[in-house]
Amino acid sequence: MTRPARRGRSARVRARADAPVLCKPALNRNVGPVDLLDEDGVQHIHQAVLHIVETIGIEFRDAVAIADWKRYGARVEGARVRLCRSQLMELIGQVPGRYRFEARNPERSVDVGGSGSIFANCYGAPFVYDLDGTRRRFVLEDSRDFLRLAQMSACMHVPGILPVEPQDAPVPQRHLDLVSSALHLTDKPVMGSVISEAAARDTIDMLRIVFGEDHLEENVVVTALLNCNSPLVWDETMLQSLRVYAGANQPALVTPFLLAGASGPASILGGVAQLLAEALAGIAYAQVVRKGCPMVLGVALLGVSMKTGAPMLGTAEPGLMNLLVGQMARFYGLPWRSCTMWTGSKMADLQAGYDSANAMWPVLLGGCHYIMHAAGFLEGTLGVSYAKWVQDAAQLDGYYRFFEGLKAENLPRLLADIAEIGPGGHFLGTDHTRENPFLVNPLQNNDSYEQWLQDGAKSAEVVGNETARRMLERYAPPPLDGGICEALGRFVLDRRASLGGLPG
Image (cartoon, rainbow, N blue to C red; front, side, top):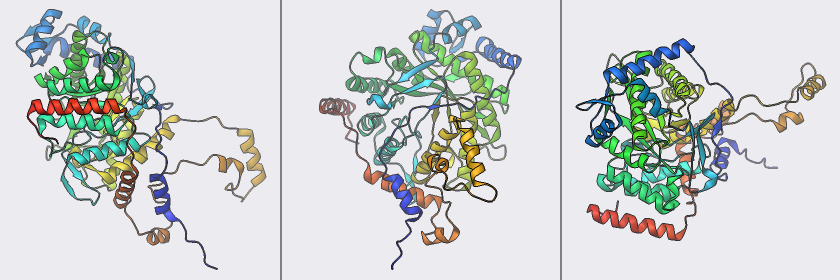
């Protein structure tokens, strides 16, 4: 009699990759948030923020913004804008603490704020570690592949538009390819282009085609990422895009990019005070543009090596800073965004796993609402790996289970099982064990050494690439109304022609 072949880990991985596409709601955190400061400590940082905004000031290097601030009554000297504390608090007090982020498939819509956390795709790297592990420059099809993977991953709520920076699409028209690709390849919430004022307007126009001309006035259907030039500068391109999105009642992740020790002080408290001042000044300006427009307090934090000047990812100090930002965001009543799952490693190895986990834990324990770069980054955010992307996405299930917290259990039933099994027995066959299996990550290998050898002795990188390849092979685009497809196509062709470009 021939014994049936053991299915092994590769079969389990294949079963996961071939499973029906599901989408989880926002993670409802029942663990945390962690507060590091008492009330006096919160006030200490708050007063430092007010001092920066009121006394030192923030530069707004944009003529329209300067004129807006003068009309509002801020103290303006050249490009330097200083707000008194009452002005700042009045403006940020107009920002909703929570909003509904709509997808074109209503089942994929999520809430931003409250006790929920959502996960968003990697964003903007120039290099890819492809399905063979080769490092090369990104092309548009890579961007589309990562949008496809995000569509198929239950915990990836926001595919974005720019998972990677395609080098084969001309910059002036790149946003047309990326936004239209996101709207065709996913039915989840999307992000908007900020490379120029025109690109931001094109994004809004395409979303009006999909959602309806007037829908954006009362509903959030896009979120843009806007970076401050730390220290203390908001530039013209970012402010132009901010006006477009805020004017359409669409939020932005208003985000200083703080390199502690370089673009900010090598200090936990001082760095947090600076980035809060920068972010709150940008959020305040959005309220000058449109009162009550949703906004998100953004955070991008890295330490800098004093030996080389290189950014360091997954280190302790940025983790503590994220906890502080979360506590201050709750003080200000604002939703907040941070970054995770990034590493300085050049492959999906032990360092990559350590760095990514060390970055994620404080962000979730700090109560972060909008978590970007939740899968794939290598090389200090310069590269995205297909293998690491699917491995990271699989890890998100584990974070879900942990932050769901304790569940109700029938303790008398368990005591009865313990009595029945008695000393020296086992619980593998009890009804409770069969009904309550612990979470298993099928991409992690828990087989014996011998079985691992028999299955090919595959590394995490090999398993990740194989899984990504299978997922892409079985991808099917979500349905999109034919009339909307046609209208989007016409818009892209017309705008491409006006920009003088060829199809990307």
